[in-house]
Structures are given as structure tokens and as C-alpha cells.
Image: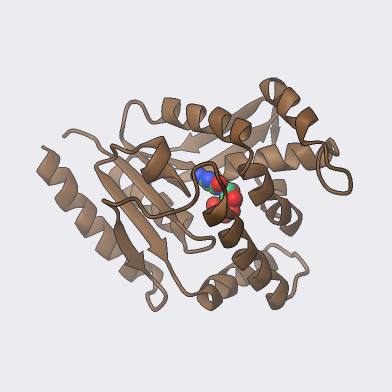
Length: 230
Ligand code: C5P
């Protein structure tokens, strides 16, 4: 059976990763969370004080070739781990601190060139489910299946708020809602590969849908697309 490329894009906290992981496990495909890569560069910039109180984007850009980023997928479990300079930073990249700065870092074209190139290498054999903001438009414009996920800002902030509380972060719902909306704004208005729906993507609004229903619908659709390719 010939494998395909599946691109899942959409606004912040629309459940892209949850769906992408489950789909990858069901199909025995590789799952790649590109947001983790932008988050890892942001963590690096924060740790080295290139952003935050002082802004030194030029130094960050100069340092980019020296950053060791490794995204390690676990195909069968649909899990993944992000390594930054040899250290597992899967937990550190999910904090509100990183969320507050990541969209600014993701708007830097040198950062995007580096990460898009890595992502294209990871997907060159196909059999991949990749989620992000520009996968169907820039990383894999020829992907056989493109999904663009949306949900109301309130639904998305509620999901994210629960996730952060479960991880023990002290945040208010208002902070999370503001962060989700701010990231959407920066991501969709930036100059370099802004977040937008690819013309040939199917739009999937999951505001009123549980996880099983979302997975069931997308899985059925995916199997039809794969059958057409074979
Ligand atoms: O997917 P996640 O919410 O973890 O992504 C964090 C941020 O990384 C996004 O808000 C966006 O600024 C950036 N991003 C991006 N392009 C991608 C994936 C993520 O610009 N392909």
C-alpha cells in the first residue's frame, strides 16, 4: 500500500496534535509536531536571554547553526520527544512562558527556513502525519491530504486551560484565552508563511465534537484518500 503525506494545520489549541497522533498510530505513520520545534528554539532564546527583557534577535539568528535540535518520533505510540542540545525538553517547551514568546520567534524568517528544511527531510519518505501552521501551504504543498482545523476561541482556550492545569501550571483562563488569540493574530498576519488554509485543504470545525467522533470522521476520510492513491 503506497503511503501518503498528511498535513494538519490550524489555529492554536484546535486539537491538531491529539488527532494527528491518533491518526499516525492507526496508520502506522510517523507523527511530527512542528510546534515543538518552534517551541524548542524559543526555549533556547529564552534560556540564553536573546528574548525576554532584552531583545537580541540578531544574536539568536547568528546562533541558529549551533543549536542541536532533535525531534524523535515514536511511530507506533504516536508519541514524540523534543531534544535541545542533547536534553529532553518535552516538558519545558509546553509552559506559558514559552507560549508567550513562541509566535514572535516563529515569525523570524531564518528560523522558519531552518525548521522547514528539517521538516521536509523528515517527511521525504512519506508515511507521515505532520501538524503545524504552514504544513499544507509551505512544507508539503503537494500533500495528498490536507486538513485545516478550527474551533471557537472559547472552546480552544478551555481545552488549553485544562491541559495546563493538569500539568500543574498556575494560570488563569483569561490569560490562556488572551494567549491563544494573540498567537492566532501573530501567526496569521506575519510576513513569512502566515497561517492560512491551503486552497485544497478540507476545513474541519470540531467545536462541538468529542475526540472519538473527530478521529472516526478523519480516519474514514483518510482511508478513502489512501485507497484513491493506490
Ligand atoms: O502547535 P503549537 O501551538 O505548539 O505551536 C506553537 C507556535 O509555533 C504557534 O503559535 C506558531 O507561532 C508556531 N508554529 C509555526 N509554524 C508551525 C508550527 C508552529 O509558526 N508549523
